[in-house]
Image (cartoon, rainbow, N blue to C red; front, top):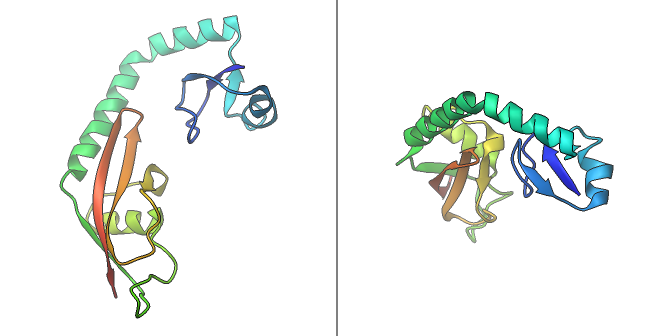
Length: 147
């Protein structure tokens, strides 16, 4: 079934994308949650017209995302965590902690935009991805150290 996404859905697509999903996923989850609408012929025409009218707004949003990504280029973080004698972290480092470290460095980033590449359960060097726009993402290296 073809649907038009009304908001970003992880591992599926971004707002205004037309994607193909299984019928049950669309009818039982995406449409009732307000995340998507069915891509009928008339809905696709309305969608195309909306995109045409919003083209300059979309360009501005992308430019803002590129500016924010440029501000984060070259930023490296150090995150302190409580560590066992073997070097294992109690818990793990999450996007919330990365967002807090970025805020301390002077960069306000919503934690929902941050994804950590792999699990962070040991002391060491890792990377996180901040996705500002579907075409604009920046990778931020961070190091986990013992407190």
